[in-house]
Image (tube, rainbow, N blue to C red; front, side, top):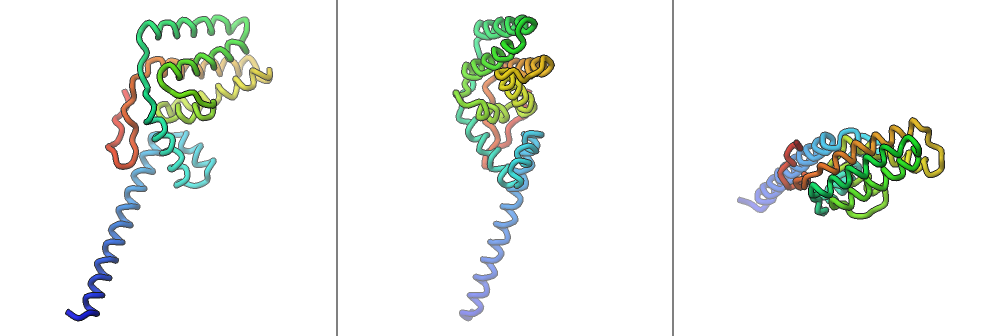
Length: 197
């Protein structure tokens, strides 16, 4: 075999290896992208609209997953759950006389519950992102409730807005109260996350 033939064979093998790598990478990206879309649903669409780029949206959402995977989420003991439920019932009863105060209290109670089960203290926007990882179907409601709570501080929220915020907080509160230690979330290189029950 001549030097030219050896160079041509090496070049052909290198080209084949590059092609196989490119196909495998594209397939992996496509699978990851589809999993993120399926997992985050409308939250994926919101992040995509904000970033204007699928790859950026994917990176941001994968970053959320990796962050939340480090948390030590734990279920609450029954007695502690009952205390939180009692506090929630007090908030609901208070709503009639003081809707703004009830929404502020609901906001604070959800933050306290998140801390109790293992979410780290963070700014509200970071907590919203953290919630999106295990509760993507509720994150839009949580975001809306937090926006109303901000308006309640400045008295710009209507009674109907406050009622809706309370309903949104309640949905997340109920989910968090029944939180079980989540399985580690799917990230590239690991088996997919099993369906939640």
